Length: 327
Ligand code: ASP
Image (cartoon, rainbow, N blue to C red; front, side, top):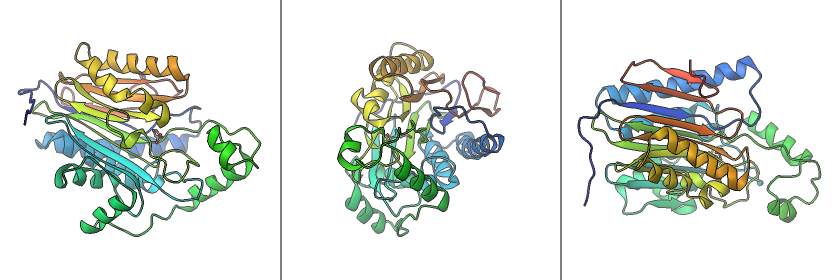
């Protein structure tokens, strides 16, 4: 097996995001909550890198903290399907040997990102979905019964289902004929992390509840290799958030990684989001990247994308609701 490993990386670090915001978050309490969650998530991931752990360990741990926090659209904060159910997607990829694991449409699992890693490391497969993923989770004692949505999510569901015509378009015609008011564009609260470790290995991890009022059985970009995530030591690692149907159709993260072979993480993320915007319009997504030199990239076509970044150059966590306003 070919393993591309870059030795003596000049720096190591991790960049995480909490999805994109179509409208700027106005409430200070909400901003504080987002920043607090990002801070605890990135601290865990960076501590592991400092201890010499791999970028895979780092992105897995960081994403798991965001899944547990309930602040973002992942894990306990996952949005609901049109049937009022939680169905989560998650994935992880190791650039050292381009090994990958993803789970789609999972229920009854506390940390889908951890299950995705188990798919990558303990099976011969790359992607497991629905009942099969559940059976696998049971085998590993990772099954926790149904993920019950909390009251906040149920309230949001009740508002959306009653008063809004779903922006899904075709789905609305099919399922929601009785809804006639305009359905506001929804934020994309998927969480993701890209990291580079001391050995110069890059990784990406993503987790999401998908999109509000999606159809039962819909799987988005966050479970699809090359779409919502990609990592390869030949180029870099990327993970995306936004309208998964568009992101998948552009194989956005593979595109971003391919770009990094010739340019840096920053240029690659901008080019990728420009491509997405040109084809599908604004408010469709965001992307974070890391290249194999340890440069990070951030780009999005919405108003905000909460992010946190830390690397070994100055070991200071930078958190922002908007890039480049990193504080
Ligand atoms: N990309 C996710 C999906 O389509 C949604 C998000 O980013 O919030 O499943």
